[in-house]
Image (cartoon, rainbow, N blue to C red; front, top):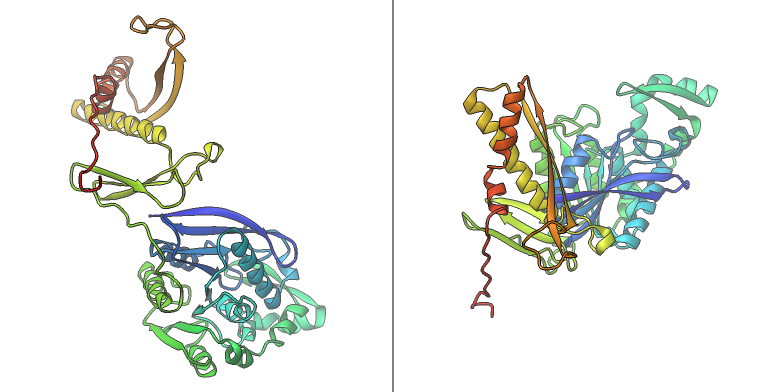
Length: 410
């Protein structure tokens, strides 16, 4: 189980960049920074799957849209490869201030070439992983080769890439030629992991060979047999993420204290602290790992629903299940049930059992939305059945809770 948070920070040109921070349920073992492919976005499949899989393995990863792309501000026409590198450095600064400086940089396609450059500007970086990356940034010129004469003569031209239009300026072309990948790789002095598909039709496998030969040790090459350039097949992205996580443990400080996810026996629920302050909790129930927290306004981090949210969710789920089951048994045309619930405290002015009029009681308001061609008699009967769902019966019955301390832990 992971959590994904929307974040924003200022890029190299001062524009507000949109990012997403994928984090494990407990404290992160390490922090990574992901750079997406040319004209892609942070939400491209490879970025999503690799970042999420790494978070599941305990490594928090920030992925973001470069200036002028995705949900980030700015004009793509005014960017170039150098500005992408600067955006990565700005992202590392953001992580350094908000969480922890990235010890791992990951780049896909042209993003791979960018992280190799950015690593030299991020002193905390200990490892770099590239996926289907070109040896030279200028390799990207082949994607719009037919437009290069117009770009050179007119100063700019609109090109179509992956079905979208982009304005490429002469400055972009010239910037690509200013970078010397051989010098960058010689000076890298970080552990390097190179992934490349044997069937990549966009960036050929020979690029991986050139990167490997120019880099110094420690360096590792892993072939992704049969994968496409974008890692569009889920197993390929999961494989890359798993290999990165295993490799990173050798070079990053990933062995700090970790909270072990609870495991509940059948018929029980286990709740334990998530190791992130006083409120976040990990919940194991019937083989599923859940999370609970409190809202920010009461001191939590809002990383999961609160206890009363979970209580209402339990009642709502049980209500909907009970109504669907009953309607199916009756062969009634009930298509869907939507249950909206709200919990509050009310003054018990009319409560005969209350000793003081100012005392409050709990009120749960439950509203049903029944979809389907039901008549009024069927709707009225389903309203009655809602009160017969097992969780409703439990909440309205006399409940006895016995609490003890495990003698082994006393």
